[in-house]
Amino acid sequence: MKKLLAIILIAVLAVTTFGFNTFAETFEDEIPQKILYRIKNGEAIIEYLPSAEIPTKIEGYPVTTIEYPGIVIGDHDPDVIGHSVGTKLVVPKGIKRIGANAFMACKKLADITLPDTLEYIGYDAFEDTAYFQDDSNWEDGVLYIGKHLIKANGNLSGEYKIKEGTLTIAENAFDNCKKLTSITIPKSVKNLCCIPFDGCTSLKNITIARDNKFFSAEDGVIYKKDLSEVLAVSNVISGELILPNGVVTIGDAFNNCKNLTAITIPKSVKNLSSTSFNGCKSLKNITIAEENPYLTIKDGIIYKKDLSEVITANPNIVSGNITLPKTVKLIPDHAFSNCNNITSVNLPDGIEKIGNEAFYHCTSLESINLPDTITDIGERAFARCSLTKIKFPKNLKVISADSFFGNKFKEIIIPEGVTKIEEWAFCECNELTKITLPKSIKSIKTGAFRDCPNLKVVKYNGSEEDAEKIKITGKLHGNNHILSSVIWIYAPTSTIKPVASKNENTASKVETSKPQNTSSLESEISSQETESTVSTDTEITLSPENEMENNDMKKPNVKPKNNPLTVLIITGSILLCIAGGL
Image (tube, rainbow, N blue to C red):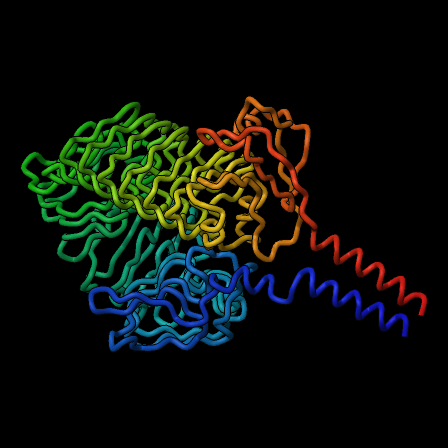
């Protein structure tokens, strides 16, 4: 009887203290239980797929693309979210594209059927599935699914002939096959995805069947049959390359051509990818025909002819302080990524958008001005830079995912009007000590301030009641609990106390300096002369004669609150003692 009563009491204490649904509530708004999709150009694009049942139509629109089934978008960690695709997958006829990592790490997926309608398969789309891990599915070191070549083993060497009947060669299919010297593409292949031969440093010979209706090869370069597009290039290309007139589009074909030193772009080229020359470490000279009506180049930066848009920058040339023309309205995705020698950027008034990864990994970039005309800053736009301060545009509404990941800010002030801070936005800003949040903020997503170990103060331009309404997701996995273990300063209220996360009962502690009549709380915190500890369950209230003046805090009266956890433990102990005497 005693043991039974003791067990019941302990269970009651545990449930009362920690609750049944702590984890579920933390993640309930992060794991969709239905298909997520978007409609674009009359087609349905699946962004999240919670099961193996793939519809052929959504809202009457044909489904053509699958991007990230089985996982939450942007989170590719199967140990955190898990996959629910199952053991068998049948992709229905009509699907044209499967995105990168789409079914990656679906560890039970052993039976896969792909339709002939597929035109594009992204990198690692089926990596680490049961099908991928089954050696019997590999033919001479190459993995096929139906009529689609998915992946070649890195040890593939010598000459390889792709089997007749193959329709698609997936993105990065022969990635880092360093011993591959020659490859033959049969007449059946009609879909060649991005950079299929990246890292094939010994590949000197690419042969395409004469009766192939879709491609032709010349001097290590694969073109569309009519020469209108450059599709793929052998990494062994070196020296200078002059593209033939008639080429209209250059995609990512030249990625990692490390020995390419110069390229001449003819007057016919209209479309140039912002990542066309990524990894071309020796490329020092890009020439664009003067009579080209679409593109121009200035100081290593390629623009549209009217200078309204940056296309791409050559990281081997662009360095120091750069000033963009007053006519520029758009900096597209990846335009300046990996330009490690840029130290500062001057953007013109009138610029409206900065794309995804536009300045990604510009490791020497310390300063940039952001005009108020900017309304959109893309994901990872300034990730892995060295920015020490930033003034956000007044018209910005959302701070995008990873946009300022890994910078060197000490303080950031987010302007009124911003309503959302997306995932990992300021993650790993190790020197960040203080943030100011506007009253307009409604949502802070997973990991927005993860791994900001020196963050001490959140100044919020609203009341404590307003702060309680801010939706903070991913408190556990995303390390947003850091927002619970710092001092929050509210305005215009005179109460200052740390805000405890919902469903988090840990008594996180924050350190403050010994209060003095002549210094503000913010100054005390930054002084790091810590003498006392205040629990998250301690409420600091100003007496009437010590009200805030100009947001400075004078000597506070510290009033401990009853800790519910402590009360429960004491009560439980008493009950257990009573039980022991029965």
